[in-house]
Image: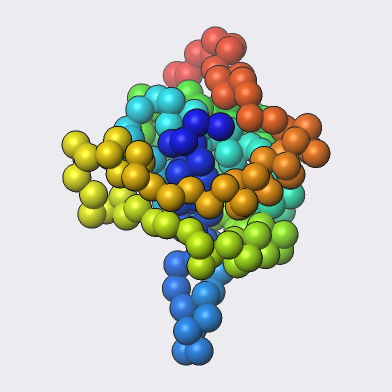
Length: 185
């Protein structure tokens, strides 16, 4: 895994820990898809990485969507809602991967993403040893420097990679959802 990928994995895993309760304990919350996909760099490579992570985390039973539904209702770049319904995580990721060009003017009824118990346990296990980069307060011209100096929690990343490998969703072929041509009206 590239360093920026490990940084991104660690970063968005921490997005699930968004608040603390009265006893100063972490509260695991849901996030909208748009909140989840907050790349450190605004490039297609980062976008595809986040799409692939949604796919892999879902396939490994680490995240879920409301009411057990597949994520649906991406309304980006179209007026026809029916074009963006999806019946599988593969269909959804294909649609999402191809939305890169519309990412800056998206409007969507975005699905929520919930961390499942196994993912929550992993995040909790390593949370005290995870660095964090705030995408809101960082100078975009210093992203590469921040990534270079970032301390990746290798144990956390290795455990997630092991789950992916055991489930047959290895870290490869990130652009598999971009292989087909599809006309979007």
